[in-house]
Length: 158
Image (spheres, rainbow, N blue to C red):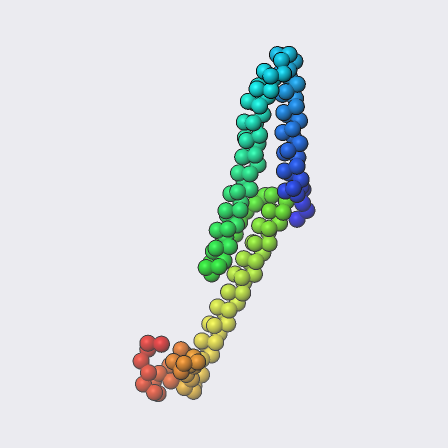
């Protein structure tokens, strides 16, 4: 993904635009009133809400994307690899979302591969003509094939 503008560049551009707008409003108010005190009051009254609006307009999507990434990482931590994020951003956050989705894809493929291997192993264990019992480190039976269950009298609670 080619970056369009860095987040730092976006914030710097927003700051420059707000300064230019503030200077333009101040100049326009001063031309109308001719009084610097009145101009300062009007300029502050106009530029402060403009700055707040612009900051919220820029930061709102960033905050939503960061919350979505946080929720996505929580899902990964909990073993849910099905969450993918959509972001049309061409900045560092867009690259981060791309990397998050790539990690999710790898984990989904690895889980599917592991599931397929477990199915193959279970098929081999169940189809062998010999009694086969697998135990964990404590000696507890975790897998036994049908022959082992029939030959040694295990019940089906494994």
